[in-house]
Amino acid sequence: MRLKNLATATAVTLTTMAGMVSAETATIGVAIAPSTLDPQLSLLTSDVGIYRHIYGSLVKVDSNNQVVLDLATAYRPIDDLTWEFKLREDVTFHDGSDFDANDVVFTLERLGTVPGHDGLAAQYVAPIIDIEIVDPHTILMKTNVVTPDVAKRMAQISIISNQLDKDVTSAQFNSGDAAIGTGPFKYVDWQRGDRLVLDRNDAYWDTKSAFERVVLRTMTNPATRVAALEAGDLDMVDNIPPLDAQRLMDRDNVTVTVANSGRAHFLQFDSTSEVPPLTFGADGAPLTENPYADIRVREALSLAISRDLIVDRIMDGFAASISQGVPEGLTGFAPDIPLPGYDVERAKALLAEAGYPDGFSLTLGCPNDRYVNDAALCQAIGQMWSRIGMDVTVDTSPKAVYFKKMLAGDFPAHYLAWGNTAGDSISFLKSVVGTPNKEHGRGSNNRSFSNADLDVLIDKAASTVDEAERIKLLQEVMTIAVAEHAFLPMHVNNVIAATRKGLTYTPQMDENTNALSLRKE
Image 1: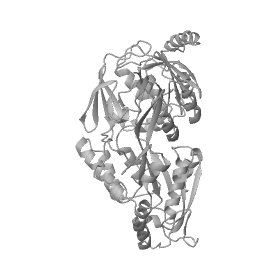
Image 2 (image 1 turned 120 degrees about the horizontal axis):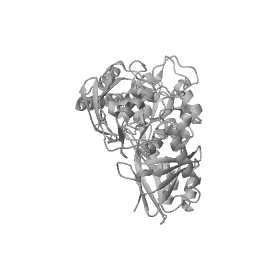
Image 3 (image 1 turned 30 degrees about the horizontal axis):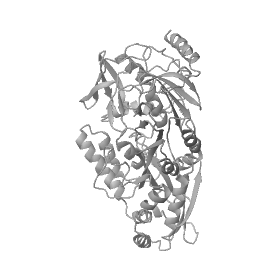
Image 4 (image 1 turned 90 degrees about the vertical axis):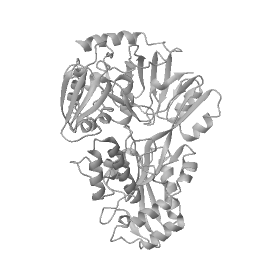
């Protein structure tokens, strides 16, 4: 019944859309299109960024990837397996109905049941085995294992209304019929791959948008986005390439905003296979041992990379070197880890000590359409490694092909980046450093490194409720992982956006574009 009413309202709205572009409409050129508006079908970082416009969540991340309250007013552990959430009382859904504990229960019960879901949502709530409604605005979440980051997991979960049909489909969300949230914007129209039109939610409980309407226009080509901004067809564009950013900074009618991303870029080596693929001796003969298993080889390859040169020449200054798997400011960052050094002579000496005085040949796998200047970065690393005697083949491929090959273990060395949407190092350590183990939720993106002692510490950090002790454990794990060159930290990109003069924008550390952060001067 509710869907029918909303569909009618939407149809009325659409009839008045034509020609509504005005000073109160902000048109934003975005690089990535949402794959769905069903917040439980996909939990890709880019999709979650879109959901935040329409839906609320118990907690959310701010522009610095710090977890802040949203639909919850407080949360706390009652014991090791029980978390209490107090819910906001002054919130309504876009159709005017009240938000309460029943909506949280309905949301979590539907997770993992949506046909075709990507599995991430179910993974986030896997430890939650029961939800008790204490009163309309108090719930208790019970877990089957100690889960100190329950609240941070909730930052990825959009709350939907319990008044939707129990068997509501993704198609109904995508059509707008079921896209009913408590967020700052209300659904108006979605043309897949082209644009998403949203109206300001004037009943939003928090700071409202400066614009009555926002139009998120998908423009995957960066040159097209930038040209449209310069022509005055757009009010804002995201994902500005570094070269264009420098040029736009010189224009009087454009404001460029820059902030560090929370996504760490790094390299990894296959140090666990008996004989790694695509690795041969200096004479081209097959090897009988794994050179990457020797920490001296991993250190040598790290010392041969000039991160400063990559930041200055490849990223045109719009990046920053990092010392570990998360940038400064995120929970678990270990302040005592220094930035990686650059010492070609020491790198040569280490290779010689490890038994490779003439180097060896290897293939470095890289995507060529996933990260800013990814292929150029890998070519530069290949050239740097050649200075210490390595014979490097750089194998680049589109992301759809690359990630399949990388996860299959087809490369002895590969380039990867890890986004961080919850402001905490545990996801990086579990997924990238931990030895693959489904029972413990480790190693989803690790085919390259294993240290049983570190696994024990990672599991301990993942099950420690005391926050101070947990942070201490996270820092200890990160320090050991970096010392062992479990991965080679490289850099974080800058998040670069540009607006027409008269507007300001606060970039998101998670690299998503948030229309709510677009303001008038």
